Length: 268
Ligand SMILES: NC(=O)c1ccc[n+]([C@@H]2O[C@H](COP(=O)([O-])OP(=O)(O)OC[C@H]3O[C@@H](n4cnc5c(N)ncnc54)[C@H](O)[C@@H]3O)[C@@H](O)[C@H]2O)c1
Image 1: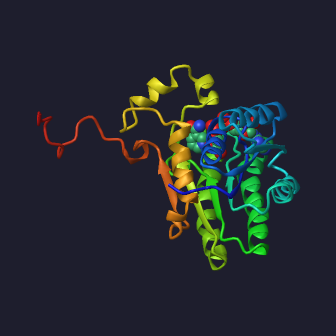
Image 2: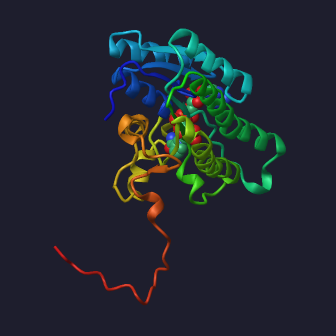
Image 3: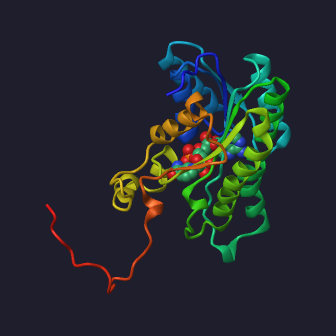
């Protein structure tokens, strides 16, 4: 695991859930972190909670809407002015919105794409410009999803944006590699957060039945992947999509009757 002392980190959409877990993980490893969220109360409370735990002012909140490209620039400038140019940037802000394809409107489409895709694209661009200008061989991480790998009901727009982020990681890895910057995507599977728990009070139990790991994912699982990809140890990994889903996306459905399947065997 890398040593993040002296590293400046930006995480967007981090007032709760996975983004919060990433900020906490980086801060505990010694980084200075700018924690962004669109919700001012969430951002301030989240930063204060991590600072309490760390016993130090490691995390600064920055309230802004990542759907606005100018706000992405302001977020990177805030980090540079306060801490110095960013070494690690995680474009994590995303809207998880279920909508049946036959009912999706242009407004819903634009809202999801604006945050998940445009926001990630222009945050990565603002960060990369700052890294290049300051000769920082930085790390950019894009928060994709297994829903960008496998089709999921009512997620046509969400899934499309998450698939696009995996392609964006490959494209940016190519364009930024000469500057020593690596760009990778992370694809969490079902991850227990405040939101997923609220959507389904039995979220952990239900996903434990379909994940090969036999349990639901945690924000700490995703943070471990992010800290690895942001570490010195991962310097040769770029354009990759790291799936953190307990094996969920490995499965393919089989018919109940399948002639080449061997009979159930007891190998105990
Ligand atoms: N939780 C999961 O199971 C899961 C699985 C795969 C991928 N993901 C992805 O991980 C990321 C985080 O997911 P989560 O479940 O922790 O999300 P969440 O909904 O719990 O939290 C997202 C945070 O982002 C903030 N936010 C929303 N719009 C914003 C904007 N325009 N600008 C700035 N902040 C904004 C929200 O206020 C919230 O605090 C998302 O990109 C999501 O698509 C989550």
